[in-house]
Amino acid sequence: MRDVFIIGSKGIPARYGGFETFVEKLTAGRQSENIRYHVACMDRRDGISECHKAECFHLRVPSIGPAKAVYYDLRAFFWCLRYIRKNKIPHPIVYVLACRIGPFAGYLAKKLGRLGGVLFVNPDGHEWMRAKWNACIRRYWKISERLMVKHADLLVCDSRNIQKYIREEYAKYCPRTVFIAYGTSRGRETEKGRDRLREWYQRFGLKEGGYYLVVGRFVPENNYQTMIREFCRSDTGKRLVLVTNVEKNGFYRRLERETRFSEDQRVCFAGTVYDDELLWLIRKNAYAYLHGHEVGGTNPSLLEALSATRLNLLYDVGFNREVGGDGALYWGKRPGELKGLIEAADKMTEARREELGEKARARMEELYSWEAVIRRYESVFLGR
Image 1 (tube, helix red, strand yellow):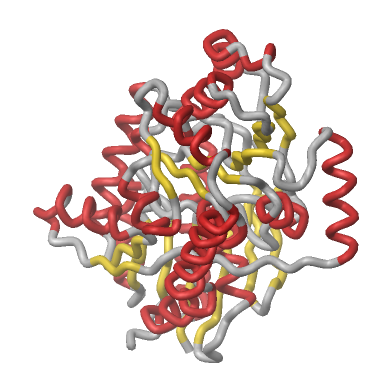
Image 2: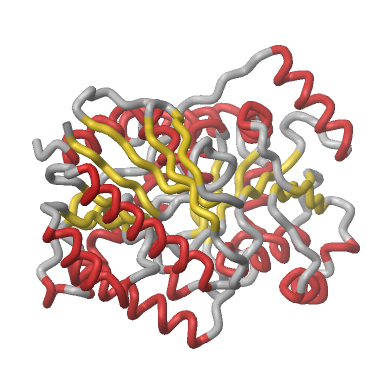
């Protein structure tokens, strides 16, 4: 039996977020009886529960700003060490999602090694490049990433671009890496789901095939400025629907001032959607999907769009091309480029849209199915 302790997600059952969905799928889809999962869960109080036959250890974490995630990961790691020592767990794996605790990684890896365990790390994307952080925090993330790479026994990269970056940027540490993609699956469609879709359409004045769709966190590095600016300058008669956790903060006000989207009735901020079936149907029935993410590895919302939406227009960066391949079209930040692509997309034949959609779905089924991802993870965990 191999015990795997997972740190870094907010926990399961998953409610929202890429790491949370990954842990949910990994534990629910477990194929081997020789693996036992233990999952850290951020909560309001300490406790133990079970989900998908995984032991969930709930940890209370105070609201201390950006340091909250660091505190949470550290507390979870020490919980794992105590549990491993108390229960004499042989050859445990502690798998840390993201590089938040680098300054402590050497000490923690040494403690874990003395107990016969190994440290696996998912480096995620380039957290140190995110515009939401100030210069000091970005510097911390970069240092933390370097130290996590230095002390990890294995780095599990969900993007070949990230794997290449880790190997080249930290070549002096001779990092051991493996590529295992993030997963996706085809959504389900029920009559109740279609009813909810119709209600959602009525709420925002939308119709099937009548909108371009954006789904993602409301942060600058997801290129909302470029997408909204170019859409507003285009002559499309369709709507732009943004499913995002929008807050009327400084970024929102700057975006409004620079793009004047509030004066364009085609632009619709629709809030968040936590209903998986509804969100899949919103994607499936969009005319096209716009993806502006430029920081990170394999993005879950992109995989879900490529599984559902026929026409996908992606920001041209290595991470996105790696996933979309020839099943998508690409745009850059030059003024007029995305505007022209939107106007060309409006004139695209149904046959061409269907051809691109088929290519995208085929890539997802071949390269990014959850079954294949789980099988690969279990093989690595069991040392096969």
